[in-house]
Image (cartoon, rainbow, N blue to C red; front, side, top):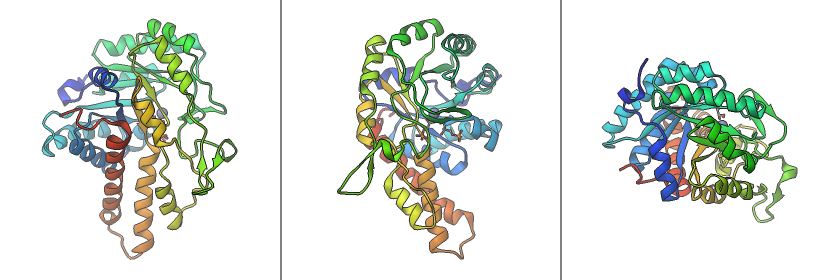
Length: 333
Ligand code: G3H
Ligand code: 13P
Ligand code: ZN
């Protein structure tokens, strides 16, 4: 048993309380490798933004949970080296799919876990979430739960259609489970293809697809039921079109990739939404930079020569999100 407190990590409780009061959101960035982690820490340290490092089931399988945990521990020390005296870094399990997975993360030094029972019948979601909360709270680890189903592929749970969260269920769910934050479904989804072209309109000026707006009425309904309670948005990548263009200009083939417009995320960040999950945008930034080097410098074979630019591009993206979208800069001085 390792406590996250010994590793210099923090849970989400105070971060979220301050974010709701201050009208901003905490960035939750997924990481699978060293370059992503370095870019996240450099961006957070430079902007003095609290940050949530997210580890998915896929990341645990790809990079090994033990290694990822030590990397997160190293990240705290690295942040201090970068001049961030009191780093506020949370290590969070993204989309935990069972009690055992959540327990293993709690026991192993994670400061926050998500139990994703959103694909289960309501009562089973309540029972599973409650079990995780009872375990995690013994060690002051915070728990994110989910109600409502996002469209697209949610790890191994596939949802053809999104089912928006029902505001009338949230009070019962939160009081029965004791969860610390709640992920809701208001029209976001995972990945770089969030909307089908037929769901979008065409901007005649740019020729780009414009997606339908998020269901802010559902968010407002949830906020009315649970005033001041921390709300989480998954699937919040914006799919920057310049990165998509760079990828396509250098041999990639991403057609009709569409994300959530940043102005909608800005609006959400000012509400009770206090955690915004971003993974796909970082993947796009990394891939765009690597493709460019491979295309422009075909003789290059030192990985540092393409992973370095990839890291720089991700850092730029993370700083942009923190400063221009979530507004979390300067909140962890
Ligand atoms: O929720 C999905 C995250 O983007 C993690 O994706 O399962 O491919 O690591 P992953
Ligand atoms: P994106 O695919 O939109 O980046 O969402 C990531 C996410 O929700 C991780 O849990
Ligand atoms: Zn997610």
